[in-house]
Image 1 (cartoon, rainbow, N blue to C red):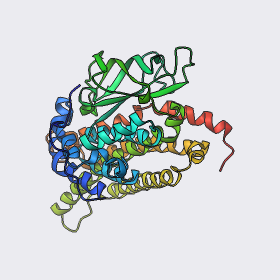
Image 2 (image 1 turned 30 degrees about the vertical axis):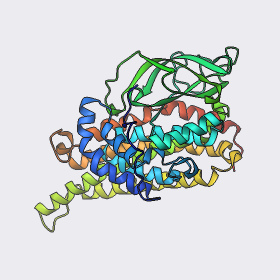
Image 3 (image 1 turned 60 degrees about the horizontal axis):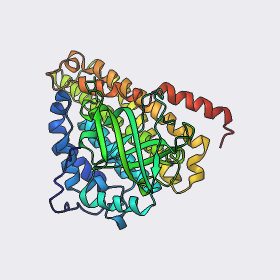
Length: 396
């Protein structure tokens, strides 16, 4: 596994205390944006963005201060992801997925091994990936085929996974597996796996329509390690309380960034048209007003959901409530649908200029990245889960 930061160098100089979202936005403007087209064209890992974030200590934004991190709130990280999503959706998705894993470790990793790892992550700015999907489960991340083999306080596992995003550039992977060979498919644990006891055998390539820089190839994953690397809580609790809501919030934030940039391009297009005929309202101006309202609705939905999560995150019962889970799932479906609708409306505003790849108003990459949003944990599966939960929901 490759690394994205020079591990022999001195620890990174931290940015100002707080200001995490502003610092992420600065990286988005100065680094992620200028490299976005090449990252997309070559389907390569955005190493420049990750290095810049690491150099400012931002890969440890969610790590508590007592462990060397920034101790930032999820709201700060989500605001930063909006900025990254505006400039390079692949970079934003990688950073989002990394922070989802960090959030799981912070809340659910209480063993000395895992706390020491978080401190090391903060010091060395390690990059985390995840392996929750598996061949043979039909895309159901709540069940596993593979299992832990335990002997002498150590584990071993082997997992065939169709997707591990940016695995070749990650420093560790959080992996789901059945607790034992005799455990049912839903009795899962989450395990920290890292070199040199982590082996990734390529089992597929990554050549996709959008989010090309995430490099989400398939692998056969083999790993061993101390039992202390197994997170303390059952994966079902980790998923319900942290992984799924954090995923929906961070993903929705970067999708909001894609939508916001599309609307910004459409606004500039309409303004340019207006300058050609002073005193005349361009035909697309009313459509711009409509899509701006849609963007505001999406912005309000994402921000309200982040506030709701942060108000509940200290209360495991509130996080486990049916209504809370339904709401977070609904955000993902709504945001992933809205981003496509908004980008499509912006293309109608800009016309052929948005369809051209050599135009300053090109929206090709925006649309291709946006189309992947509904497929990341398929919206049909999420709606089916909501339907099942609503059968037992008594209201709040």
